[in-house]
Length: 209
Image 1 (cartoon, helix red, strand yellow):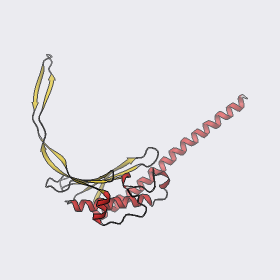
Image 2 (image 1 turned 30 degrees about the vertical axis):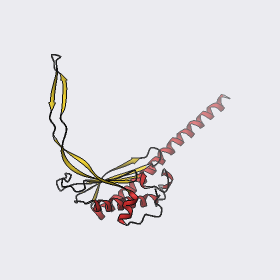
Image 3 (image 1 turned 45 degrees about the vertical axis):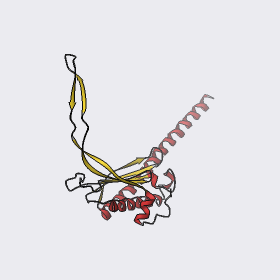
Image 4 (image 1 turned 180 degrees about the vertical axis):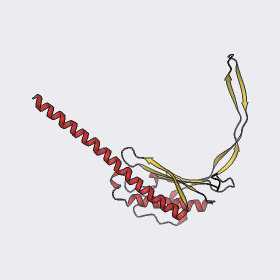
């Protein structure tokens, strides 16, 4: 009986170890597929729109829940220009995800929809600063809405700093405000409305919201 019990325990350990290794392998597989999609997608956006990818990520604990990609553009952009780039980038990313057969089993849902991707484009000047001329400084997709923001220099509010000195005396010092760069909302719109304005036809596998 003791020998039989040992055999059972060894078998259980082998099964548990196999399952853990299998999960790690699966995780490696779908992360590899995400990297493949994002790398190929980023190259296309650079060639087509001069967008440079500087980061990507998302939510992928046990499956692929969300994919985010961050870009920089060194072009001056209007709302119309930013909308076109954002919509086309989102459509292209969704198409690549939903037509990639190997990644499909790992998607939180299929087809992947606009609420599960995030594309952010940050517009910069030649000196790598945000434009301060009222043009679009940032456009992003979040929760199936597109947000447009401009950059401005604004004076921060003064505040009182209270601190204690070595002699245990409390003092108050007024810290004046200073000019700081801030992102200011221009407008927001549902992604579906932006899609209609741009006139882009959604991919057949795209999930509608």
